Image (cartoon, rainbow, N blue to C red; front, side, top):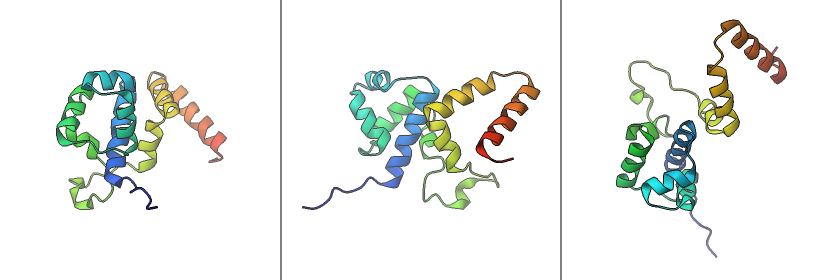
Length: 134
């Protein structure tokens, strides 16, 4: 019996960017699905890259999530380095992975609310110490 075709890396990337933006807004899969007139299960499939997102649907998602369509393709695999622009470096994938996690998003939101730069620095030092990066 033939195995199912694995998702295209671009579809996985676009889906992860949908998830990232949805989480940044604190929006549930159900709420996004309602806004698009589809089920949350379909949103799950889009976010995993299992189902491809058509152009008109992607445009609608971009509108609901208040980002340009290009947001979903930033740092996409296979993007030529020449497309980076005027020497701007692309963020590494671990940053996107971190911000795509609920822990990373929560930590980031809480951290940016800390106004005292000395406290921020001490938190960074603590995390480095815990990670063994002394």
